[in-house]
Image 1 (cartoon, rainbow, N blue to C red):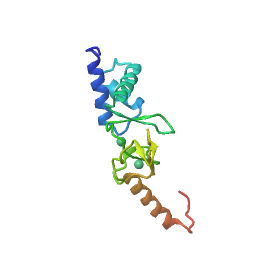
Image 2 (tube, helix red, strand yellow):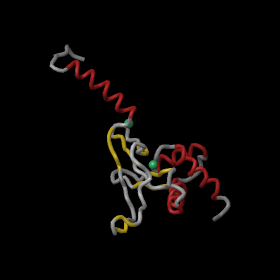
Image 3 (cartoon, rainbow, N blue to C red):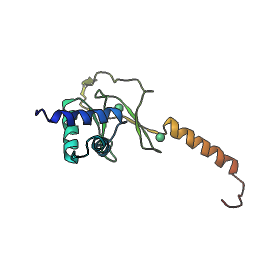
Image 4 (cartoon, helix red, strand yellow):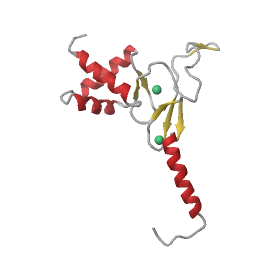
Length: 143
Ligand SMILES: [Zn+2]
Ligand SMILES: [Zn+2]
């Protein structure tokens, strides 16, 4: 590796650690805020390299762009359907059992994703529901 790649790499790694499971575009925005002349291709390449080396985790989300994780060890995620943020599913026992052999199956990867509302959005949602609940069966004069 060239020595001059070290700073780019460090910036990319810092962004992944600071942001909450960012996608490549979010990492690019964070890095370019600190180093405006960095190219998108450079950031993307560094992300791929770091993921390949196992320095960071890569989360295939099924829908939308893949995300990156400061925690490379396998763990479950929770995606909030309201704000779109992805959290580590701390409520679920982690890490998983040994990944290789489960009842004779050679397990190579596993992607568990919980979905719902994060605490912040759940709170907002419940407040709204209460408002709606009070308004139910009543007609409002506009507004
Ligand atoms: Zn949320
Ligand atoms: Zn994670």
